[in-house]
Length: 279
Image 1 (spheres, helix red, strand yellow):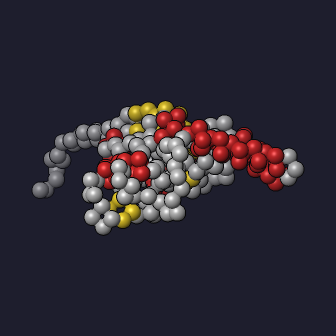
Image 2 (spheres, one colour):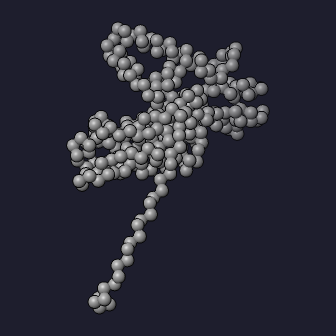
Image 3 (cartoon, helix red, strand yellow):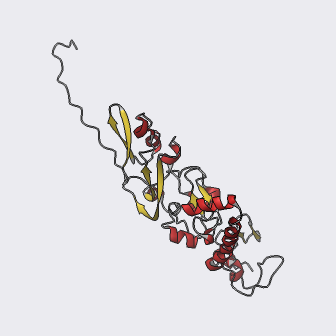
């Protein structure tokens, strides 16, 4: 009937009413179009009779993946390798780092449908699907994986493609001051502090000037000015030590970093001209 109701409620913008087609590669299965259509012009084939609302339910998702986790727990009691993997997952007490624009972990976890459009669009591939980082109900919800990559300082594409608002659209200037985490320097691992050898890899890649160096006997020792750090993970990825000497700790609720102001160079003292100079 070309009423365009389905197009107006489509979260992923995958309905083309002119061509009467749906781009299934982008559809996230929210079923809003089915609820909006008053003429049954849009449906799935084969057609099952829908007896209740098909909107995404966090409770149902939690039950399904909770059952899956229970099955894994049961298997782990009998298999050593599964038991070891489960131990690694449970040992991680920190929440995952969520992308800029998600505001906080709780909001992101409740709003994200794990469609992974942001994962596909991320130019550096730092966004990766998670396992149990958000709990059983958050299976495959994206997280920032700094062991794999880093968040591009000049990018905010994830907020542009998110169909549910789990990652809000924020201006690039605001994104550059969004503190999603904070880098921590492990001096007992850092090669500069342990072996007293110059490195500087972390400072070379930091886009916000959050890493400064103190010169002690021609050795540059790194320090972190946390007020400038946004938790982009570039320093962690660049760190050459194993384990990493610098790691990003997440902020469950995002903060705002201070903007670095480049100090003005000191005025050169003008030397009086040499009277004996011939010109």
